[in-house]
Image (cartoon, rainbow, N blue to C red):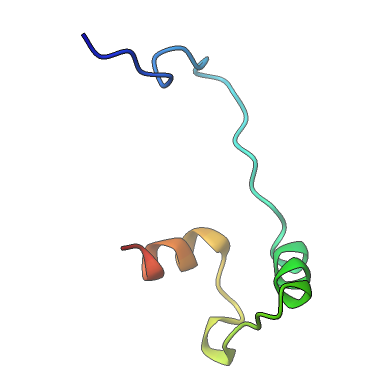
Length: 52
């Protein structure tokens, strides 16, 4: 029997997605920078590109 948390989450629950500008700023605080080729892409696009 598999007990998953996905079964317990409501269907209308909000999913947090940060603004790209906030994500870039927090990355700079950690010493990371965005590549110029990724400048106009959304976080979801970058997740798809760099998924492992």
